[in-house]
Image (cartoon, rainbow, N blue to C red; front, top):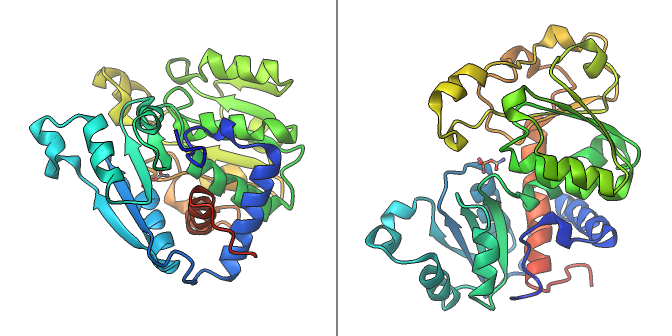
Length: 306
Ligand code: CP
């Protein structure tokens, strides 16, 4: 395994997270540089993506590198039966860095075990999405001026939502208070609540999404109920529209509160929220470019600040 791989956010120390946030800020000021000259980055997306793939590819392009890869594995030899192991070994012959999204939990970890090329996990099933977490942390820091002592309310699909799982783990360094708002079917899994207990993180669980929760929150982290994770589509239909944020619900929110969402959204944020200054999800996605430029440099051992 290459030590510069990033499979889980838990691999990053507090200092490393802070360094990456500083680097993200640097790239926001200086997005176009030729520091990846001669480098090839492979983006292997076995599952659909808009933001993650395009922001990674933009990050490489803006830093002067080259991109190979695919956005649809049905057009690759996977459809002929090639294993993930063989695919990763082949791509390692061509690229200096592999960015991979896969529908199976643990696929990114497995990829690191079959190659010495660094691998960045761009989302593995319902497990982890560490690069989303770095852009979430950057967005939180930019909007709140700190990562410390914040109340973060996570709403929606907390069972299958890899972005909330990764964010929860990363926040362990910063004394958060979490509110988990979900219906019974989509509650935060016990392993993440146990993680909170082990790290002394305060949390409470709610089924109601009302003023008590919204008006005492610094970061309102909305998530989509993910149809693709349900084996029982009747259950998906039952729970998909339980929580929808409307602009009228924000009248008494804290002035500093920001609404984040990893996107894509479906119905969980009404479009009447988009023009509210608390809506930050499109800027959040933009921050992904800078956070991913920083993560690519980490993976390739490049220090643009020297
Ligand atoms: N947030 C996120 O991962 O978006 P995509 O699925 O579009 O990459």
